[in-house]
Structure formats: C-alpha cells, structure tokens
Image (cartoon, rainbow, N blue to C red; front, side, top):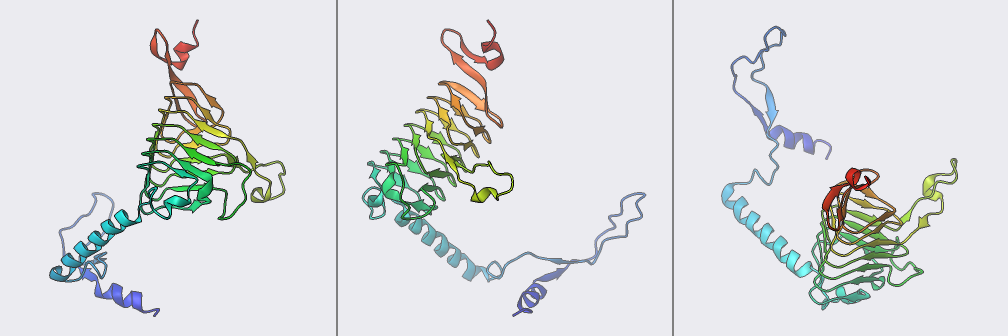
Length: 260
C-alpha cells in the first residue's frame, strides 16, 4: 500500500516538450525545459468524459436532494427537539454541531446557514442553569459556518443578519493562575445580547458580556465586548465606535461626536 500513491503519481506524470529559454538576464539561471510536471488530475477527473459527466450530474443531484431533505424545520423530528422553532424557520443542510436543542429557541422565518453550530453547553445532555440558553429572534439570518455557543444566556434579536463564520459566546477561559494550563482553569460567563436590526460582518467575534444595541453594524473581523449603544458602527480589535447616528445631525464620526 505504501507504493500505491507513488504508482498513481507515476501514471499521472507528464513530460512537457522543450520550451524556449526562460533565463533571467544576468542571473545565470539554467534553461528550464523537458522538466517532468504532475498534472494534478485525480483519478475521478481522469475518467473518460462519457462516463465522468453523467456521474458528475448524479453526484450534484444527490447533493441537492440531500440539502433539501437534510434541512431542519419546525415540522421535522429534529426540529421538534428545539425548545421553540417558529413557523418558516430552517437550519440548512449540512448542519454543524447541535447540542441540547431543548434549550435553544429559534423565531419564525429565521434561517441558519449550512455548517453553522448552535449549542447550549459543551456536550449533549449537559445540565444547564438557564432555559433558554440561546434565543434567536424572528427573520434573522445566521451566516454559514457561524458558531453560537451558549452556557448562560445569549439573546439575538429580530431582523439580524450575520456574515459567514461569526462566533458568539457567553463563556470564556479565565487566566487567574499563570502556572495552571488555561484550559483547566474555571471559565467565566456573562450574558450576551444583540439588538434587533443589527448586522454582524464576516468573522466577527462577540465575547461574553457584550451588550450590542439595535441597528448596529459590527465590521468584519471585529472583536466585541462591553456595551455598544444603538445606531452606530464599530470596528477593530477590540471593537470601537467609528461613527454613530446623532438625532438632528445624522451620521458623524466618533471624533466629531465627542466635540462640544
């Protein structure tokens, strides 16, 4: 078996014809010609086209069917495990980790993208101190690959949209002892709230204790903790207000907002 990859690789080698010199002036580089290159073509792509094409169509049709059948809605057996799932809500296939669904509430017409994980606790069957642990409002869109990891209380409002790979948690490792491995130190929790009408950009991280107001934009890659007022834009690590809405004035940068 050790020689199998070598034999496969040998069968897919290609010797390119000699090509004109590609010397760089003054470098003394030798001419590159007749060099053996790997085609990087897998065995499946090497199949004859009359066979490969119908197989390709079959694979894509099967995946599309799995996506339809594997989605979780309120009427599905898996959907009925949730503490609440509103009409029209859907977790798209394939889902990420889903733990302790009975402690998770999802509002009507909310869509959770593929590969997204929503958990109450770190393992199935874990006893939690609150119910619900994670609450997502109505008409909210959670981007693909996002993680919502609740241990105490995460409240996500209505009409919120997130980009892909957003991370929201109400628990973090403590670092009280400089000798003990951090992973063994007792974690700390603080509730998280995200106000209705907000937008969280791709790869944003919402840390324990974050209290985000309504109609807030969190820029891509921002790391948020603490209190963020309504109707503002935050960016950076750690996230800071870069502009906000001032009644009677409109949008102003934070520097101008602080001026008398």
